[in-house]
Image 1: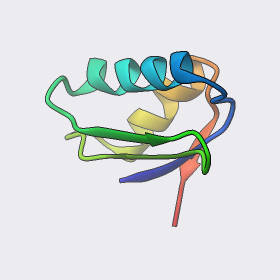
Image 2: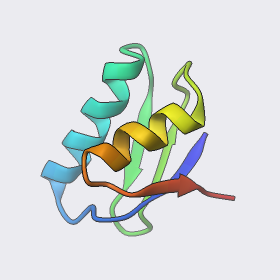
Image 3: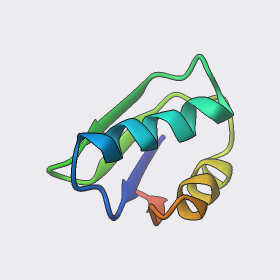
Image 4: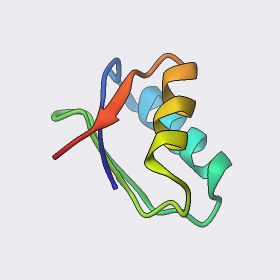
Length: 65
């Protein structure tokens, strides 16, 4: 799944976003691009659950095309 995530500005944000997704699926592979704000993951959970968890942590997320 691909998500457009707002509010990521540094490596700490990347670590936080990665940790949030791995809380939902510890085996997930997570790729984060600060430049584009895109997050790609193969997490075995719904895109809605991932977006909600990121939103709750202060990283507004929506599905990217």
